Length: 420
Picture (cartoon, rainbow, N blue to C red):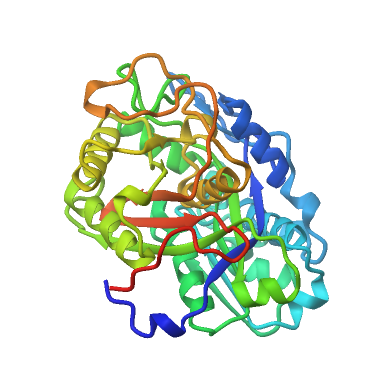
């Protein structure tokens, strides 16, 4: 991947982060959950699970996203849009910015999602079944558009000079949205970008994965010989990004630097991952970021805990890294598969790991599958000095996005940049 004009492009840094997850919300709460290796799995309460042999998920029950809303009435936003708006408010606050400072700048809001407001659509379908065709809830209909995820953020924060984009590239959407923000900041098109992903637990998606036979009865155990599948989750992760020049000018704290990203789309199969395509996305990310496999200290894997994903993803990692694979973890073992929010929450986790010097564990681990023979940091976090971290987002339809983040140390780049 060439990088035309790379010498004149701006360095992009993360100065604010917001996270809503089942193991902790806010940057500090999420970091504590990651370090402690909390398990967010619990019985589903979001919808009626009668008829399912098992119904465990990673549902958020201790954080009400509506409590973070200050401008938009909560009933005008679905749960996913509430997650996006709440995490964005967290990110702005974490960045040390006030609403006036944000409102007056050229901004991008880029939110990834798999399901949009499918939880609301579930509700509308339920009304049709219970009360007959033509029965609708007009409040729910008005908020059902997935465009509300980004537009709701812009409205909640009072952004005036803003591009609001919702990215629907399924379970890789968070990384896609962050990559779009990186391009916009580095090219000087916008002053700040709020990018990430959000999804809410819904019956449609749980049922779909259940019917595919990929939902685990109790826990998610990526890379383990005894893994039984994924757990559906929900939440939101948002990064506030700006140029390094902007961050230094206002004395901002820098969590991490965005070094680059890589994409691939093989479209080979609706649901089956493709090893070569994943490897191409990793190579593209390395070229764009100016790193080599030897520079990468940690991989935050897509790591769903399904048979097909884990074997295929590890195969792609070996294809790029050879036998010297970095530590490779999956935070889905803790927070489940949050769909469009998955790689966004993982990006927040990567920035936390870089800044605070630890690697989150892959919990529920008993016995590594020989076909997934990586050091997945089983069950307990470890202290580590990290310089470069790789974050994977893999999705149905062959949509793959790999993000590279680096530690920021007083203006020094984490690696020597190589423009190709």
